[in-house]
Each structure stands twice: as C-alpha cells, then as structure tokens.
Length: 380
Image 1: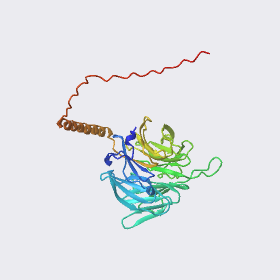
Image 2: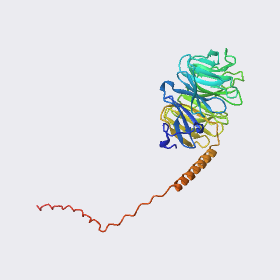
Image 3: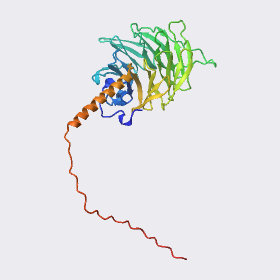
Image 4: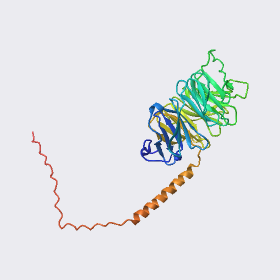
C-alpha cells in the first residue's frame, strides 16, 4: 500500500516518466503513480471546469498523454518536459466528450450528442452517429476503425476514411420471454485483437460479443454479470478474457471462449468508472468514485496496490513497461550511491568535542513526598 505521506498533492518532485499509471480526475488534475517508488503526485493544476474523462497515449513511444476534458478541450501532457505542451479547443455538439483517439496525426473526438469529428490541419470531417453516445473506441490494430454506442444507440463501426455510412451496425436481440423489446444501452466496448470481433458491456448487465465478419448482426455470444449496470471493461493481455465493473463496485473476470465467470476481484467501495489491463502483465488497474486506484493481479486475485488520490476518478491509463523489478533494482542502486556520498561528506567534516562537566560535590537533598494522613471516623 502507498504510504499516507506519499499521497497525491505532496510537495516532492518525481520524474513523470517513472510513472506506471496515469489517472484523470473530476477536479481536472492528471495524477501520476509510481508503483515501484510508492509515490503519487499531481501533474497538472486544479480546474474543475476541465474535468478529465478521456485519457490516451499519443503515439507508440508513450512520451505524451492525451487528455480529453468535458468542455471539449484536448491537452497534451509531455512526460519528458513534465508539463502541458499543447492544447486545442475541440468543442462541438452537445454534452461531454465520450471518446478520444489519434489517426494520421489528426485528433478524433466524439461527443455525447453523437458528433464524430476528425480534426485535420485545415479542415474537419464529421458525421452524426446518433444521440446518447456513451463511448467511442479505436481499433489498435486498424486505427482507421472506431466503434460507437450508447443509450438507444446500437453498436456501430465506422471507417474514418469514409464517414458517410457505418461499415457495421448491430441489430438488437430478440424480444424477451414476455415478447417485450429489450432496451439498448451500450456503455463500453473494445476490439478483440487478431479478429474482427468486438466485445461490449451494457447498462443492463450484459456482456456481448459481435462479429462483423459474419452475416449475423446480432451478438454471437452473450452473458450476464450480477444485476447492476456495467460501466467499463478491458481485455486481458491474452484477449481470452474480459474484466468488467459495475456501478456497485463489483469487478469480475469473464471468459470469452466459454461464456462463464472466472473470478471476482474484490476491494472496491464505489462505482467503477475506469478499467485497464496491462498489455503484457497479468495486472488490471481500476478507479472510480471511492477515490482509490487499485491494482489487482488477475491470476491470483490479490490486491497488489491501493492508492488514495483524494478526488473522484474517471479514467486510467497503464504504461506498457513491464521490467518493474529491474527499475526497483536501479532505484536501490541509486540509493546506495547516494548513501556512500553522504558518508564521505560526513567524514570530511570536522568533529566538535565538548568539555566534560565536573561532577557536583554535593547532591541536592531530595524532598520526601508528604503522605496524606487520613482521619479515622469516630465510632458510633
């Protein structure tokens, strides 16, 4: 557990490039957490009007973090310069940003009202994807594809090179056993690597898998988890399982091959807003309304790190670095060198000796404590 003295908001300085997890808060502050050094710091200033609800990497080097704010502002935080280097006004449409991506050096944004926009240098391509958007995600293997979905807005896949019509539109499932229409509420989605499949989670506690490569537009697999709205999901490093979280603070790992519950990850105390799995390690980071960042081990279900960050947290971003043990060794080595330098400095300083005091000839007599005399009660 991170020590209380190392909570966010401290005055100590820490190299931003050493952070392993980045968290966006309701207060508009970007928070960085060093899991090896067990430190957490605020990297940007407080600004509640620019609440951070989208976070992503800009490029594969992971030296710049894209921050999407609810007012349409997009910022770039440099981990090398340790400050915000660029800022754009990407406002348009209505409602907060629901998605942020980069395609061919151009920003891609999507608002809650359904305005999907590609911001180029001299122009901007846009399309209406439907109102009530809850999430927009980009395909990591084919960055020209993005997926959108929301409340009464089914899953759609768009080609950023041709924004006129979606390349795939999901079809609602069949009516329930009462022959009533099943409502649509897509909360989050992610492209499954190595295939055309897309996994989604809904506000009606369903996890569904769609396959646009088949003629079927309905989900090819569906399962439910608990009875509370699901808010976020993230695929594990092997892409065979998905981690989901709901509004009650429950988080679980579901098997996408057999469609069953594998394990539950405990410890949350509030609604989960952001989940991300490490791309190569069996770790998952989660954050939400209880103001804690938690790092679980997916294999052992153990809670490895728990960091209090003082604000309601919206989104989380994991670094792809995996040699954390080597970083720990380097930190210890650097600490040892520093201790040796300190010893040399202390040895070079002159010693100051004090003259011995003469013992007192006579010791002051000690006063005896008076004992309280108790009067005896007269006999009756």
